[in-house]
Length: 73
Image (cartoon, rainbow, N blue to C red):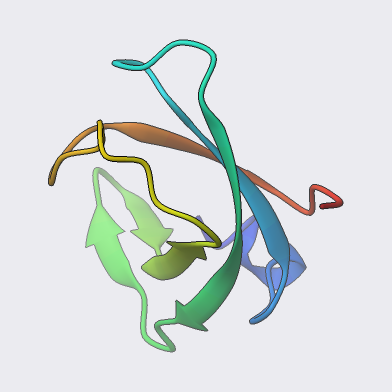
């Protein structure tokens, strides 16, 4: 949201975890931040693209991921 996007920057390290694959945590980084926000349920939200540093063969398109920003790698 607009409350937290100011704390996110391109190149920032992230950690990705997945509900469907307990115990899997992948490091990655923020690769882009959309400059224009969209209204979603009364909030302004910004699309942030993150890229994992490695892949895992168990991952599939549209799986839910939790992204933790600013995690040291």
